[in-house]
Length: 248
Ligand code: IPE
Ligand code: IPE
Ligand code: MG
Image (cartoon, rainbow, N blue to C red):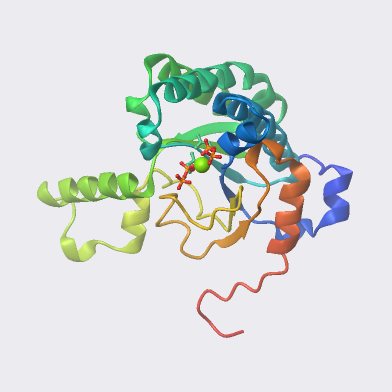
């Protein structure tokens, strides 16, 4: 069941050619804080308001999948205090946003090696998943302790196990089997990849899945991002000619 799109959505772009799956690299929190003479953590805190606005917008617009890069496997190498503040903020987010998920028919999901996250965070993840499992609107996926290479490594281990116990033969490995062994096995590949703060790199995000994603990069720092930036990205996406290697 899809809710009626908000008026600004109907005016701004064609709702019939929306991307099914939007993936976002939320970047620039630290620089946003620095520009204001604040500690980096204030940027992360401000970034939560951007998440709320973008998530509710995508739910209202009828986007089916939104996948947000929230914490990479490489981010553990940041100063201890920043990592623990990020985990605390994540914990707060998971407690505070449950009503938003309920109100907007959002199903909560994660990708990444969540077993390595603090126990409290793991518990909240399980709880939010349970509480939202019958919601039928937007699937919101947080990438937590995620990287494309660690995901592919896990997938290769799992496929190797299936081969060694005789469930699978090497010549039976197909692209579909690889996809089915990724954290994203139950989602379509992203159609649109957004990165904020102007960096021109993919930083180990969804490496397998973005093979044909349209990329949209904005110089705007994540804490300044609001729904109008996503609308801008959607308008741009709708002008792209997606050829998938073919000739039109
Ligand atoms: C993105 O903002 C948030 C996370 C990676 C957790 P950054 O913290 O990377 O901000 P910059 O890139 O240093 O400005
Ligand atoms: C990517 O941002 C990871 C997340 C948004 C969680 P980073 O700030 O960690 O990436 P780099 O260091 O600029 O590549
Ligand atoms: Mg960054």
